[in-house]
Length: 302
Image (cartoon, rainbow, N blue to C red; front, side):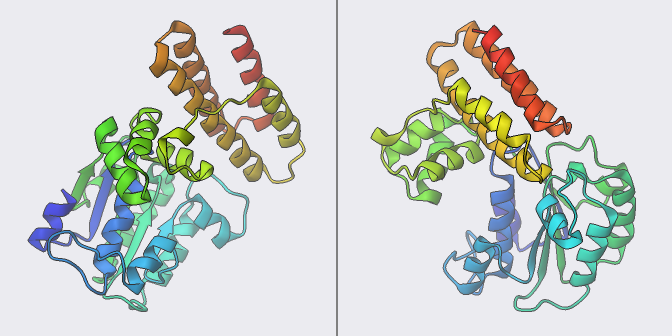
């Protein structure tokens, strides 16, 4: 879809990327932003990926490309990180976009996890979209359309749908984008359940380049207990959540690897327990309490 838009020269001002997290939605948004801002764009596949503009977009430092998410909101409003994106966040970002682009031919606003926009924020966005300057391209990224108002959806010019990747496609993307040896990329893909995000984290955290280095994580109950005690003492709730989310992702990789290996009821039960814990974390349950429940559930589920 994006390639077709690029090749035909059509540049819609408002795009919606739909699909599960971890399958390359944010990566594709950055790739499209690179193509729009590239100093030497290619007619067939967009960005050159080597010019100054492309490198700035990749590093997240291009002045004409802004990702509006919970981290951006935390920096902008100097408040603790919140899952919901507020009206003030969008309004402040819009003030920035009213000016002409600093370096490139256009400006790009990427709203990640757009399903976290409150209804009030979406209503305020309608006026923002109506007054959006011609040099500005909006990209909204969401898991589905369910939490987006019909009035927002009616203004979308193009929808791009994403799905979980096959092991073969994921292996190819990993190998090309991270420079990973082919066999290592294939094994990482097999452990990642179609998620580019999981694969990247597995490889980047471990510095893996070859197949012999790939091992599922082996976190012990003592590790979870120690993190539980530590997270209870964190002054920053957002920091505690990030720490807990990180260890949960490691546990999920381990559980996925186990399930792919034996498809046993115990492995499936372990995955379900972890998914329930992830939902608790998204629902703002205290991180230490989540880990304590997780420890108990995993012990009972053996």
